[in-house]
Image (cartoon, rainbow, N blue to C red; front, side, top):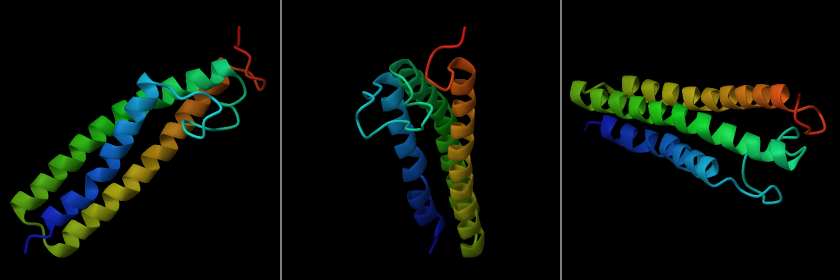
Length: 127
């Protein structure tokens, strides 16, 4: 049996789900008092900082996970066509999930850096 089909089915939902939620946050930012959205101490310091963070996170995540979703699909299709053995398919599956988690951390670091440069600790815009 070609397990690579199962790996592709298991790999694609995560980046596609993050992509969909990111696009939603970017195009339709949640209100600050809701329990959804990009929620960090700095992003919640003011209404302006909140809106800035939602748009920055949503836009960056949408771009990153669009690319990552395509890469995941291509790697999965290559695995199916080349008929990777079970160990190789599983290693690719684990690697892609590790990369996905790392990308989430990198995006948070980038958005926090943008917030820090645009707003002070009280959420006031920098000059």
